[in-house]
Image: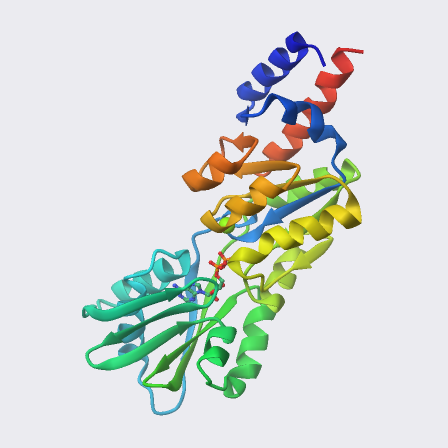
Length: 292
Ligand code: ADP
Ligand code: MG
């Protein structure tokens, strides 16, 4: 493409809220075969709500929530904010914590009022040597409903199963349909539970789900998808999306996301709207046409 056509293309893109940080991205975007998207905060709003809180026998609801929310008060994960908000709605005062520790992709731990509290994914409980078998039916139901199940342990005993739900952005299904109309394969990559991810993928028409991916695993998935389907665009918003944004042929960051995601991307969507990906591809095709 000529410098002029790229200038016109990037200018037109900016009007549509699509920022090309790399001029070459405008040319190469039309050559992709697959688009992979992060789930939380990209396809979904990224602001989950606590929907279910079921304690094991011998554990009191409010007391367990109070201890769990105290630990989550130290975490910046969106899940943590949902749990703290639920405790605040119930007017629970949250005590301070000692020895807080976050294990990325697994969960969080701390000591509260002399008690050890661990909160996180099923694999976190497994890592701690705790069986979650008693909650397996509840977990399966929550997953099918598109909710993310989490577990809490107090003093090394499984105390509760907790669910959070993160609504899909209203614009997402239309954006996925438009990507399909362009003949592209659409994949979702997430650290979330498999059943939950599959329920959400069905709702919005995703072709391939890669779930329960650890924070450093997204790059490996991007490489595999490229081998299988050709040039890849990856769309994400989070700190742990940055390596995958850099690895992809085209990294596309959600403008409402973290600074590190934006800095690692070739293209930035100024609104949080995935339809921007479709606009960017359309512009790439139009720019190439102009110069022929
Ligand atoms: P994602 O952003 O896709 O959920 P993360 O790697 O941030 O991926 O987290 C993966 C999983 O680890 C979460 O879905 C959750 O089950 C668990 N987890 C992470 N942080 C927390 C936390 N603060 N509280 C409870 N669970 C957590
Ligand atoms: Mg995200």
